[in-house]
Length: 244
Image 1 (cartoon, rainbow, N blue to C red):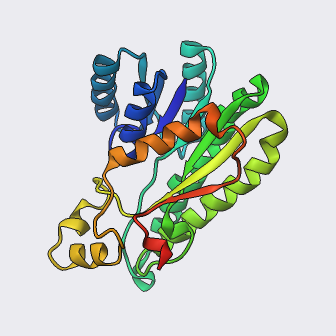
Image 2: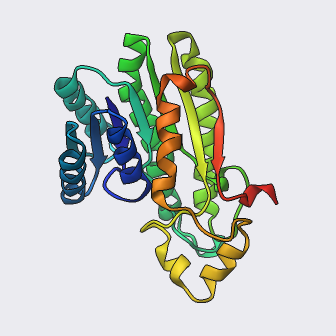
């Protein structure tokens, strides 16, 4: 079975759909309970898989531990964790409040750490499992007015590599995906802006942004036995953006 954080919409929902369609039972974690309940029902009705919706604040240690206990009580094991929950405020550094920086680090980095620790403990105990962290092309480079987000995603890449080394002896793999621009609620306002949108697309060699469902096959691959010899790797999915 698989756990997806931030699973109610965007890339998280796409990951959940793909995993369920591939035959996995899935637990969706997010703060917005109504949203994950609706998404869980849609996936369950369409695929026949057992989909659990679990309200969880990934920045809160107790909330994450309770979610892990519920998942284990429901399914008896965990095979895949997709650390997808994230936020990306846009602001010049000189306008960025310290509290906002800490909020980004809490969600994107601390959240990934807490979920990896809580769910990974069961993978280590069963000596099998895989963690898929959602990094970003911003975690492999930089982008103006996304200072906090870039810093957080560079940290996610570091977390991925270090944890891959730590858990390799337990047969638990840890990889990351670095998406470029995908059309999600997180960035649709920028993509739909008549000035900003064309500039973003203009920097992508394929001259388009990704659609959430295009992430699904990569998630399924990394979660499968086909990727059993792959760990500590960051897979870029960006339409050629980093090739420039």
